[in-house]
Image 1 (cartoon, one colour):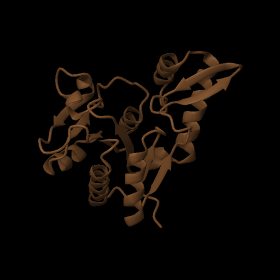
Image 2: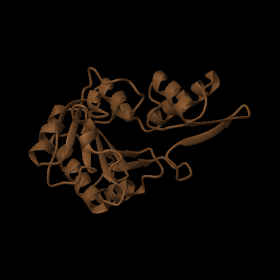
Image 3: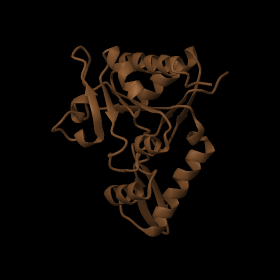
Length: 217
């Protein structure tokens, strides 16, 4: 009966995260926005007889759209405009800029992306302001957050968590960067695709955290 908090899943091949979100919403409250586009990570479309593809978590800035079109398929100005319209309509249709908090749901594959990826000297270190590694938890299961209060809360409970460096992170068109710049609190719950129970626990903790911090309505 209550639409808050808002959970969002943008990759249609990350179904464990959706199952975890639904489980918690059915027990508490909230809404889950899931993009459905053929069971694949990327969205594919045809425009003017040409085929294009983009990562739906890289389209919330002009730079991100340009980069993901080039990386996933090819670039054209017409495709750039079409993807930008799609991103704008998605944000406006669900009024995401006006949410008290956004909780994103993602899955990874074993060892492909872990909490260690954000430690100094590793691939995503430049995006991170702080990292906490929980030795008793799988490194594949971690939180990616944009606010220090989230980081402190999850660190205290010994979850893997990394804090985005909002001031210096490269704008890759992702939701985390978009909401970090907008000042909308953002939490990404990332778990290995086979770790359903662990992700349910993480969603429950995030849900309790935003409730305690007064970020639901």
